[in-house]
Each structure stands twice: as structure tokens, then as C-alpha cells.
Image (cartoon, rainbow, N blue to C red; front, side, top):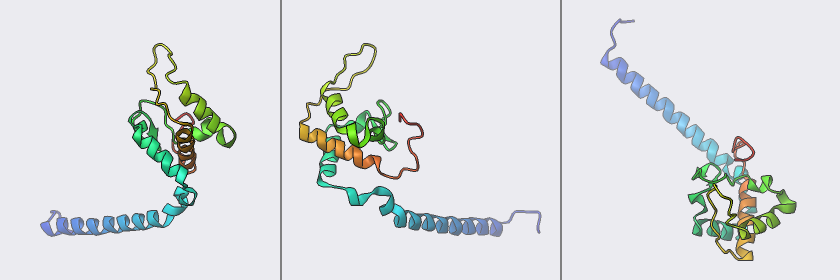
Length: 146
């Protein structure tokens, strides 16, 4: 092997590395596309979930909260709030009560505004948060409280 690094050697490393990492990219893309439907629980998406996402977007909840790691980190993560706050038995009543008593008025703490959502909007938002809690996120967030 020569002791100097030639232009041909650099070209071969560049092209070989480029081809290798392009193939890795294609393999990871294929894997993602084949497992996506199983991980997202797409079959459980209902009209209430779609309307709940619309409530989420219209009220800019992501401006303060994060959902599955995306969004602002000002307020708690809501990707697992369904499991943290009662699950199937108690979540809907928890969400209704929590949203209706905002702002809490605790001194020294920033307040969540009162959005004056209707009962149907709260039910739809609960359905959306229930649906997001069932997405396979590889155990994200890393701690229970988000």
C-alpha cells in the first residue's frame, strides 16, 4: 500500500461510502414503510379522533404542550396523558373537569387559559388523546410524567 493518499483513493472512499449509506437509507426507509401501519393504530382512527385533532390544532395546544416529543416543552407532554390520568375508566371525566376549571389561579405558576370548549369538543379531544396514547412510540416519553 502506498504511503500517500491519492485522489483516486479519496474518490473511491467517497463513492463507496456514498453508495453504502444510500443503501442503508433505502433499507431503513423500507423498514419504516412496512411497519408504519402496525405502529400507528391507524385502524382505530374514528371521526371523533379527527375532530379532536382539529380541536388540538385550532386551539394551538402544541404551542405549549408536546405530543409524542413534538411541540413546545412549556407544559407537560400529552402523548401519555391518557394512561397517566385514569385510562379507560376515568380519563374522559378527568379531562372534562380539568379543562372546565382552568385557569387554576395558583400563584407563582403560569396558567393554562380557559378555552370554553363544548362537551362534544372535549369528548373529541379525549378521543384524540386516547388514540395518540396507543401509538407505538418505543417507550417515549422516557419518564411517566412526560
